[in-house]
Length: 66
Image 1 (tube, rainbow, N blue to C red):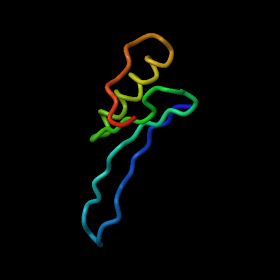
Image 2: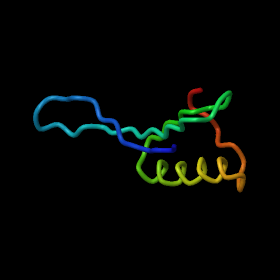
Image 3: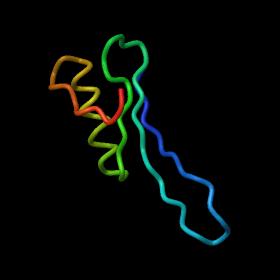
Image 4: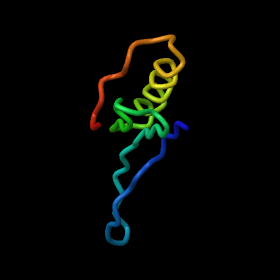
């Protein structure tokens, strides 16, 4: 399973909340399973790159964390 989602930290009232994005892959052993993206557009592109890698159509994306 592959999923990408946004994570925001709790902040005070009226202040913009910064969002970071993460892609998680479950069911893959001995490989990176977690990538981080700073912006929505990067997360969209990164999600597609991870999907291409998992289906054998592209290289393994650089891992932010293993």
